[in-house]
Length: 230
Image (cartoon, rainbow, N blue to C red; front, top):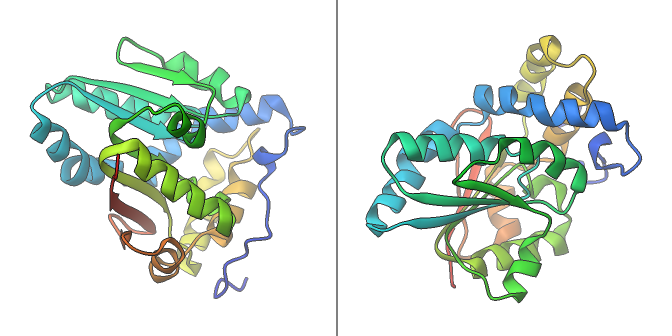
C-alpha cells in the first residue's frame, strides 16, 4: 500500500446513498467507540475547547458541522456539564440517515438539524465555537476552500477541524484494531479508505492556507485551527 500520495479518488461506502441502511446505521453507532479510542477529543477539550468556553463567562453556543451519528458532540456536551459550563450544542448534517442515529443522542443541551455550514452562513447564524470531526478528508479542493470559509464565518471565536493523519503505521494498526468492531459495518473498508484519503499535516496546512494552522493533538490525528471571522 503506497501512502506517500493522498488518494483523493477513493469513495467511502457510507457516502453511497444506496448503501445498506442497516450497516450504515450500525457504522454510525459504533463510531462512538472508535472516536473514544483514537479521536483525541479529550485532549482537545482540555486544551482547546474548555478554556475558550470558560473565557466567555456566559452561556455559549457550539456548532458541530457534519456531525454524523452525533457521538462527538454528545460527549463534549457531557464533559461541559461535568465541568459546570452552560453550553447549547448543535450538530448539523445534511444526510437524513445520519440524523436518524444522531437524534437518539438529543438532550436538553444537544440538538441536531438537517442542514450544512453554507446554509447556516446564508441565514446569518453565528456560534461561539465551530468544530468538525472527520469531514476534511471527504472534500475536494473547492469544497475544502468553501467549507473552511463557511465555518470561519459562522464562528465568533475559534474553529477546530479534527481529522486523521495519513500514514503506514496508522493504516496497519487500524486494520488490526478494528477487527473486533467491524462485523455488520463499513468500519474496516471506510476507515482504511479514510486514512488513504487523509492528509499529512503540512499538506493540510497548505491546502487550507492562511490563517489556518495544523497541529497533531494525538497520535495519527490532525487538528486544523483558525480564528473565526463572524
